Amino acid sequence: MGLAVIQTAFPGDVILTGGLVRSYRKSWPEMPLAVVVRPDCEPLVRMMDPELTVITYDKRGADRGPAGLRKLAKELAEGPWEAALLPHRSVRSALLARAARLNPRIGFNVGIQQLTYTKVVPYRRGIHEVERDFDLLTALAQEWAHKTNVHTPVTVPSLHPPLFGIPEDSYLEAGAVFAGTIFGGLGSKDKLPPFAALAPGSVWPTKRWPAVHWVALARWLAEAGMAVIWLGGEQDRELCEQIAAAAGVGAVAAGELSWYGTAAVLKRAHILIANDSAPVHLAGAVGCPSVALFGPTVPAFGFGPLGRGSRSIGIPLGCRPCRLHGSRKCPEGHFRCMRDLRPATVLRAVVDAIRETSELSDGNRTSVHPVFPDGHQIIVGKGGRQ
Image (cartoon, rainbow, N blue to C red; front, side, top):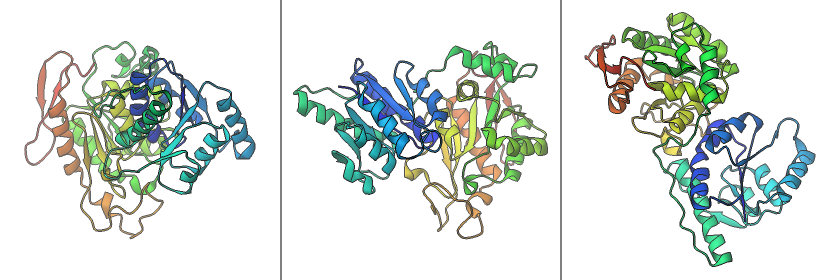
């Protein structure tokens, strides 16, 4: 017996599959395990478990169309994997598992693709995606127990990560990017100034907090004594450069770091502030507290930040939520969900998150004062996180 997890959605969805992978490994440590993902998500899976098999499916590139699906199905069919779990609600993923003749095929009771599954699991709303994915694993354990008459207790995934291991050379990558700057110590794990990671990008425009708000927040953090690193992918580089230039604050790493390097930066950051996007989930997976900004989406969908100290922020509006993933334009035309989310509100959450975690390397603390009207202080260590 063995398992293939087919998750070819966005990077954030792949990261959250880490709970399922960790639970499977603890419950069946000797069983073969493969995870099928898009090529850009391969590093994320390798940080979950370097021993598992990663199969890449370039569904919009080299593997596009029926021929690509058949090729990958053949690879799966010839491997040591018997079962398939399908957390991604996708017709293409379902057809792949069926073409590979994996059995059982277990997915949620959502969409027409459920007709191809051998076992359907209720899609529970109002819980976190990590918990929902665990429902699939529980169903698999029941199927295998029925088949073998051997009941295996399934390890419940932790909602308090870290879930990822970071290769040592990831820190070297980050250090090389920041060579000659105050962040150069990332490569040698030297002490760093206290710093916040800010990720203003998103695939969906309506998920992006306005640039003017990022500028205000970055300036407040700088006046509080915190350095800033701007994170994101290549597609976020221009946005990050424009905001950093307007704020006069921070080092731009968008487009410069791999997922490994980004994980290394987040591991040592005091906090991440980001839109509802993949960096929030990566921060949780490496144990970095985060403040996630929600506009068209809501944490109740199951994709809020995990980990001690992490927080979700949004403002109450009758039109929220308007989309499951966000959209190109605000359906109401006013974009109030993000525009009216004020920097002062976000700063309050940042202050509270840092106070709650206070994971300091040397135990020394110093109070620094952001420009904030009601006297909040950010308490950070002189040496930064390790």
